[in-house]
Image 1 (cartoon, one colour):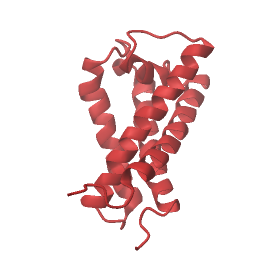
Image 2: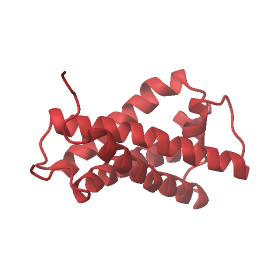
Image 3: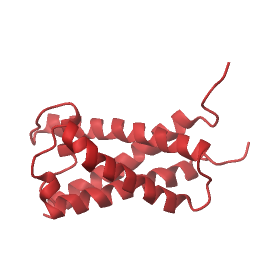
Image 4: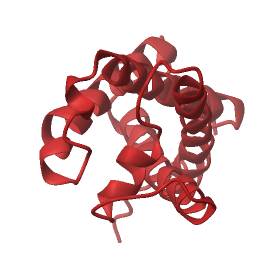
Amino acid sequence: MLKLERKNDFLYGSIAGSIGAIAKYIFNELAQFLGLAKYDNNATALTVVFSSYQDTPLYILLGLLHAVMIGAFFGVVLAFIFDYVLTEKYYLLKAVAYGVFIYLLNFGLMSKIFSYPQDMTRLPGDVVVMFLSLIIYAVVTAYVLKKIGFWQTE
Protein backbone atom coordinates (compact mmCIF):
# COMPACT_ATOMS: atom_id res chain seq x y z
CA MET A 1 0.00 0.00 0.00
CA LEU A 2 1.34 3.39 -1.00
CA LYS A 3 1.70 5.87 1.84
CA LEU A 4 2.14 9.52 1.02
CA GLU A 5 3.53 10.59 4.37
CA ARG A 6 7.24 9.83 4.84
CA LYS A 7 8.52 11.91 7.77
CA ASN A 8 5.52 12.26 10.07
CA ASP A 9 4.62 15.31 8.00
CA PHE A 10 1.18 15.58 9.55
CA LEU A 11 2.41 15.47 13.15
CA TYR A 12 5.40 17.76 12.68
CA GLY A 13 3.55 20.12 10.37
CA SER A 14 0.55 20.52 12.64
CA ILE A 15 2.73 21.15 15.70
CA ALA A 16 4.95 23.66 13.89
CA GLY A 17 1.98 25.33 12.17
CA SER A 18 0.13 25.69 15.47
CA ILE A 19 3.13 27.37 17.09
CA GLY A 20 3.56 29.61 14.04
CA ALA A 21 -0.13 30.53 14.22
CA ILE A 22 0.21 31.54 17.87
CA ALA A 23 3.17 33.78 16.96
CA LYS A 24 1.10 35.30 14.13
CA TYR A 25 -1.86 35.79 16.46
CA ILE A 26 0.26 37.57 19.07
CA PHE A 27 1.81 39.81 16.39
CA ASN A 28 -1.60 40.75 14.96
CA GLU A 29 -3.08 41.47 18.39
CA LEU A 30 -0.06 43.60 19.30
CA ALA A 31 -0.30 45.52 16.02
CA GLN A 32 -3.95 46.27 16.64
CA PHE A 33 -3.27 47.26 20.25
CA LEU A 34 -0.57 49.67 19.04
CA GLY A 35 -2.96 51.15 16.50
CA LEU A 36 -1.03 49.92 13.46
CA ALA A 37 -4.05 47.99 12.18
CA LYS A 38 -7.79 48.39 12.54
CA TYR A 39 -8.54 44.66 12.55
CA ASP A 40 -7.10 41.91 14.66
CA ASN A 41 -6.47 38.29 13.71
CA ASN A 42 -10.11 37.37 14.34
CA ALA A 43 -11.21 39.37 11.29
CA THR A 44 -9.72 36.66 9.11
CA ALA A 45 -9.69 33.61 11.40
CA LEU A 46 -13.31 33.81 12.53
CA THR A 47 -14.86 34.99 9.31
CA VAL A 48 -13.75 31.78 7.62
CA VAL A 49 -16.76 30.21 9.39
CA PHE A 50 -18.80 33.06 10.83
CA SER A 51 -20.30 35.91 8.82
CA SER A 52 -19.25 38.38 11.54
CA TYR A 53 -17.51 38.49 14.89
CA GLN A 54 -17.46 40.50 18.11
CA ASP A 55 -14.82 41.57 20.62
CA THR A 56 -15.97 39.30 23.42
CA PRO A 57 -13.96 36.69 25.37
CA LEU A 58 -15.84 33.86 23.65
CA TYR A 59 -15.12 35.18 20.16
CA ILE A 60 -11.49 35.89 21.07
CA LEU A 61 -11.09 32.28 22.24
CA LEU A 62 -12.86 30.96 19.13
CA GLY A 63 -10.65 33.19 16.97
CA LEU A 64 -7.51 31.81 18.59
CA LEU A 65 -8.75 28.24 18.08
CA HIS A 66 -9.57 28.94 14.43
CA ALA A 67 -6.17 30.58 13.92
CA VAL A 68 -4.42 27.54 15.41
CA MET A 69 -6.44 25.11 13.27
CA ILE A 70 -5.77 27.11 10.10
CA GLY A 71 -2.11 27.38 11.08
CA ALA A 72 -1.89 23.63 11.67
CA PHE A 73 -3.37 23.00 8.22
CA PHE A 74 -0.88 25.29 6.47
CA GLY A 75 1.90 23.81 8.61
CA VAL A 76 1.07 20.33 7.30
CA VAL A 77 1.11 21.73 3.75
CA LEU A 78 4.52 23.29 4.41
CA ALA A 79 5.85 20.01 5.84
CA PHE A 80 4.68 18.13 2.74
CA ILE A 81 6.26 20.78 0.49
CA PHE A 82 9.57 20.45 2.33
CA ASP A 83 9.29 16.66 2.29
CA TYR A 84 8.52 16.27 -1.42
CA VAL A 85 9.51 19.44 -3.27
CA LEU A 86 12.06 21.58 -1.42
CA THR A 87 15.27 20.88 0.45
CA GLU A 88 16.27 22.16 3.86
CA LYS A 89 18.89 24.48 2.34
CA TYR A 90 17.82 28.14 2.78
CA TYR A 91 14.66 26.93 4.53
CA LEU A 92 13.95 30.32 6.12
CA LEU A 93 14.11 32.11 2.78
CA LYS A 94 11.80 29.47 1.31
CA ALA A 95 9.48 29.98 4.28
CA VAL A 96 9.32 33.71 3.49
CA ALA A 97 8.21 32.81 -0.03
CA TYR A 98 5.58 30.46 1.45
CA GLY A 99 4.33 33.30 3.67
CA VAL A 100 4.04 35.56 0.62
CA PHE A 101 2.11 32.80 -1.18
CA ILE A 102 -0.33 32.46 1.74
CA TYR A 103 -0.72 36.25 1.83
CA LEU A 104 -1.56 36.39 -1.89
CA LEU A 105 -3.94 33.45 -1.52
CA ASN A 106 -5.53 34.97 1.57
CA PHE A 107 -6.06 38.47 0.23
CA GLY A 108 -6.40 37.61 -3.43
CA LEU A 109 -8.82 34.71 -3.44
CA MET A 110 -10.02 34.08 0.10
CA SER A 111 -11.03 37.65 0.85
CA LYS A 112 -13.67 37.31 -1.87
CA ILE A 113 -14.85 33.89 -0.69
CA PHE A 114 -14.95 34.48 3.07
CA SER A 115 -16.67 37.28 4.97
CA TYR A 116 -13.64 39.48 5.63
CA PRO A 117 -14.53 43.06 6.57
CA GLN A 118 -15.13 45.04 3.38
CA ASP A 119 -12.56 47.76 4.08
CA MET A 120 -9.79 45.46 5.33
CA THR A 121 -8.03 45.14 1.98
CA ARG A 122 -8.11 48.92 1.47
CA LEU A 123 -6.44 49.84 4.77
CA PRO A 124 -2.65 50.05 4.33
CA GLY A 125 -1.93 49.31 7.98
CA ASP A 126 -4.02 46.15 7.96
CA VAL A 127 -2.60 44.94 4.66
CA VAL A 128 1.01 45.48 5.80
CA VAL A 129 0.38 43.89 9.20
CA MET A 130 -1.30 40.85 7.61
CA PHE A 131 1.57 40.57 5.11
CA LEU A 132 4.19 40.67 7.87
CA SER A 133 2.20 38.35 10.12
CA LEU A 134 1.98 35.67 7.42
CA ILE A 135 5.71 35.90 6.82
CA ILE A 136 6.27 35.60 10.58
CA TYR A 137 3.92 32.61 10.61
CA ALA A 138 5.79 30.82 7.82
CA VAL A 139 9.27 31.55 9.20
CA VAL A 140 8.32 30.45 12.73
CA THR A 141 6.68 27.31 11.34
CA ALA A 142 9.76 26.38 9.30
CA TYR A 143 12.05 27.16 12.24
CA VAL A 144 9.98 24.95 14.54
CA LEU A 145 10.07 22.16 11.93
CA LYS A 146 13.86 22.39 12.08
CA LYS A 147 14.00 22.51 15.87
CA ILE A 148 11.71 19.51 16.40
CA GLY A 149 13.80 17.36 14.07
CA PHE A 150 11.80 17.27 10.84
CA TRP A 151 14.98 17.17 8.73
CA GLN A 152 16.97 14.71 10.79
CA THR A 153 18.45 11.94 8.72
CA GLU A 154 16.92 8.57 9.33
